[in-house]
Image 1: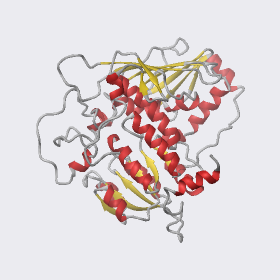
Image 2 (image 1 turned 90 degrees about the horizontal axis):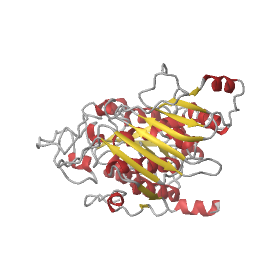
Image 3 (image 1 turned 90 degrees about the vertical axis):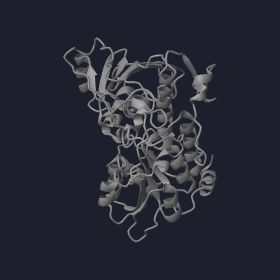
Image 4 (image 1 turned 60 degrees about the vertical axis):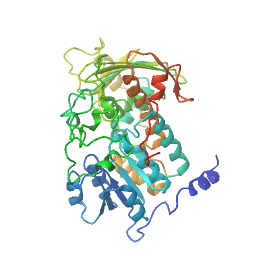
Length: 441
């Protein structure tokens, strides 16, 4: 597509100038939707240089600290009403529970708004594909909230692997202590939905919180943090942490989409109708060769199940609570979560040889925060480092793994182009979901 054609296509969606509603100050007008959790630091980082014009949250109590930090912002409980009232917004930060990401992001893009959306970008695999494709057509600037993607260590890892520091990588072992560890899972539960119908607090709009999800009675087991445990709202330990922990490998090794997946979990086959993710799981994904890069097998564990230790890593080296090992034919790289934190090369002889001949820094670095990279993209028209073209593909890969854990002990063969599994009706039924009436995508 020519630049002229791309510009014409974008103009069909963007109904106001790319930048500059507040010409005197040259600030963007930004709104935040879902500002009680991660939305709070996301909005705060944007406010360092831009104007926070509006805030939206279905829970006035949970979001109160954010409201106090931005007293000049207009407050709404329904994002649809906010969009109607705030016609001159430039961008929006979306940090709601996973099940509402796609619905809100699509509506924002239809209105020509630039988007910063928390990870995972969507709740289902098909949503990831749809949101990614629509973002390409819309011409807006986007960023997924996997903040490690803006880090120095992510770029170092790719530069080192491209230089052959550990040879050809054929295996990845990744893990997290979630859902047992971590604040988000402090009251993690397993099994069917909770019993009882306690009254909805007067500070919460429960119907808006449910959004596109199937209607069910309010219960404090879901909100504000425990929703990650439930199929209908979250994506479990892998969906939560995979966009951080697997991001370095996905980027540096250019993994793309897996072709084979198989999962195993602590859920046991019985009469209990589980509506939550398991306490622990094991996942294997196979990736084909990519150009000169050989095929890769990715092994994931969670719930404090640590992977096997390669012979190159001594027993006295403590593995991080969340991290990954990239295993090559000439060595191993160990790193932590969120942007390949604390990269280490093994064995020691390999590390010493590398220190004497470090590759040059060739990949552009991000200046400032992940949010400021998004703001830069809006103002320059040059994509952010985790725009939906990248973030959507990463999300799709992670959510395929989440899906595989819901049909455990099955070999699933994935056709990325057709967006379906080969001869597996149950798995294919989980590629997308039904929306509550009035909340269709």
